[in-house]
Image: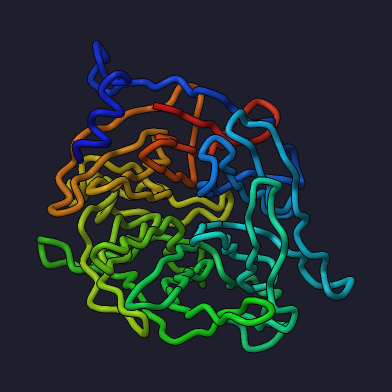
Length: 362
């Protein structure tokens, strides 16, 4: 691990079993439907670190803001449907860049922008912002819309990368600044859904007919101009990033079921094993591969299928340590900040009556 991250986490791992279990410092309130917690992001207050704010998407419940004690400061509602028959706003993922938070509105296929301060958030999105992937408002309601999201500064420009729900596509957008904020799509990249296995056979990722293996967890490494993207049923991609396009993707770790025969069961709406696993996949990630976040030279990934987190050395993607967080199950998103704050925030997807977020100060 990086020296700063290792020093911070050592007390948590001392006298621990092979897979340490970390106890959260605080947890947020539990959110019930239609609110559904999903992805966190941390805004560091430049004037007073202890008055920093944690944001969390709540899907149709909007965007929540918390203080460092886990207290809810406020919730900004997701947009209402534009017509009675249309889908409402649905905030899926969030990332922070400076004093701005960028949110993927999966319901309306748009990127929403919020100004962040210690009081919470204020919507500063251009009201005329257009859908990212859909050509028409009617197509928006098919819900092949924006999904995962990462923001960063690359090549002197503020950019957002977003993925497409139930597709392999990701899009690069440049941030357009004015009285209000907008984004402009400048490039797209389609990741594969079919792979050649070591034995020469072709393997296609199982899924519901008409749907592809989507990406959700993403993070931009501004030091190296690199995007890390978790394709849920495939693994983690490393993708060179320019402010106007993508480089060649490299699959740097795979889920355990990569290459395993599966078939879709329409009765359960799930993919099921259709033969023995040949062992071509990785050893550390149990599908879905989900939230990604960076701490210095370490990449943290959520192994959602078995409720673990895996720390990799970014340079060579060597696994360094896995761990669990007590009572946190099936985590989607995560965010970490080192320095004075030393805070890890993760999505908690399986509370008895809903969902929420857990904070770990170290």
